[in-house]
Length: 131
Image (cartoon, rainbow, N blue to C red; front, side, top):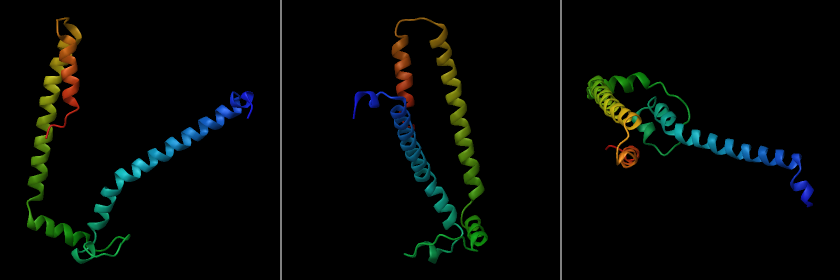
């Protein structure tokens, strides 16, 4: 290969197309890997218990959906659990919004010693999961 070919526009375009194709491949693969558990659980919610725990792979919807959800609502207080989850999520969001807004305002407006350290601690603490 000559140096002129490596620096040509056609080579750069083909390299860009190859890199973009590779990027899109991994992005689509990531979407499939991320969505598969949700789709699988939705598919299995339409089957009865014996089909769910069998060793055969079933990729079709069954007619047991309403029976399964009826049994779910009879066994556990599903809507109470959903409401409790909503309350916890809303309260956590509001408290986080309150304190992060106050801290963000103080870091943006006021100049004080240790400001960068407070910012570093704040950003670092957001990287740690709360539970």
